[in-house]
Image (cartoon, rainbow over all chains, first blue to last red; front, side, top):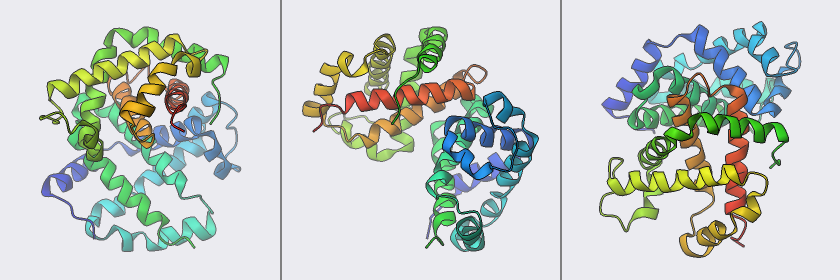
Length: 147
Length: 144
C-alpha cells in the first residue's frame, strides 16, 4: 500500500482545491497531443487536430481535458486506496478505450509542466515530488487491470 | 527517436537565445529539483558530503550541466560529432545510466515552464524535448 505523509496529503489537497479545471484540463491534454503527437491516435473523432493551433482551439479536446482532469478527483478523495478506486476505470481504459498505458505517463508529465507554469516558483521541489508521486500512483492504478 | 527538423532547430535556438541569460539559474534549479524528486540520482554524488538541494556542490553542478546544454545548442547541427568527448566522459568515467538523462531533461523542462510560462509554449516544449532527447542520445553514443 502507498504511504502518504501528512505533508504530501496536504500538498495534493491544496493543489486540487485551488485548481482551475477549465483552464488546466484543456492545456494539459492539448500539450500532450502536441508534444507527443502519437497520442492523437485516440482522438480520431475529435475533429481538426491538424496543427498545434487547431489542437489548442479544438472545443472537443478542451471539454475532454476537463473531463480527464476531473477523473483525478476520485484519487484525491481516496488517496489511501487509489488502486481499488480506479479498478473499474482501468478496465474501461483497457477494454473499451484500448489506450496504451505508457501514454498515461505522457499526460501526467504534461499536467506537471502545466501546473508548474501556473504555480511558478510556488511549485517547489517538494511539491513537485509529492505531485509526481500522486500521479505515478494514479498511472499505476489505471494500468493495473490490463491483461 | 527522430532527428531534429530545421524547424525544431530554429525553435530551440530562438528560445535559447531568449533565455540563455538565465541559463545558470535554470541549471541550478533543475539539479536541485532532481535530487529531491528523484532521490536515486543522489547515488552519483556520494562523493559530496552535502547532497541536499541547496548544497553549493549540487547547485554548481547544475551550472556545469546547463553550460553543456548551451554548448550543445551551438552544435545542434551535429550533436554526435560535437559532443564526442563529453560522450566519452559519460561512458568511461562517469558511467551515468542513460535513464537518468530523461530524468534530468524532465526537470529542465519543468524549470523552463516555471521560469518562462508564456514562452514555453507547447510548440517550444516539443522542440526542446526532442533536442534534449537527441542530446541524451549523443551523450550515450560511446556507452557500448
